Image (cartoon, rainbow, N blue to C red; front, side, top):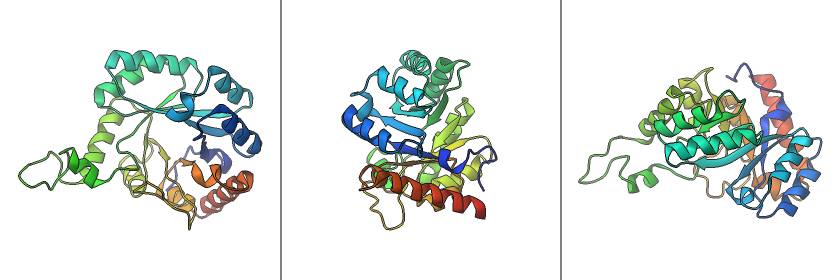
Amino acid sequence: MTHVNSPDPAQRLIVALDFSDLEQAHRCVDELEGVVSFYKIGLELFLASTRDFLDELRQRHCRIFLDLKMHDVDETIRRAVANAAKLGVDFLTIHGNSATVKAACSGKGNQSLKILAVPLLSSWNEQDLQELFLVGPIQGFSPRFNNLDEYVFWRADQAMAQGCDGLIASGEYVQKLRGRFPEQAVIVSPAIRPSGSSTDEHKRSLTPSEAIQSGANYLVVGRPIRDAEHRREAAQRIIAEIETTLLKV
């Protein structure tokens, strides 16, 4: 089931501007003008960009998802989120414990910025958490969590209890977390790959149709559009798939 407050099909698509310099990012935005109106800026481009680029996106009437996965001392988080809110971005990711979420929510104040928690990176699975002694089974050690689900639900419950606006969820966790938070959470799903595309390093991925059917509000698409020969057409195909799926759910 989809979220009752979901936007129209085109606005559900967030294109990841995973570029190392502004010139490439500008070119991509120019090519997608009139088709895409929501962009994700991660660490790579954020460290290369300036406030002028964010201002330009807003002047183009685009929304901005700042994907920085902030995790630091509580007071640092509070002040950093307050600064992010002043930039006029729409979404911001954090990746910490309940105190981190609480500090982030305090920092945004009454601004419209939405704080999204990352319970689990899309490139991580159970084995990665076993290496950190967080999830079992581990010979000779009794971890706190018996499996990946327990860990993800714990992180998600903590975040939402502290006032987080939504969650980043990939693969089967889109449906699982939508079931856990039927209307409360905005769910953004990364690692979206059209049928037949490589999943790259992501250990959980969905097609656009699968993500919508599972309950995602927004889909983040990077390489399938960034690396396409015709980016505009690639984006239009994904939007068309979203629209077709919405008519069925």
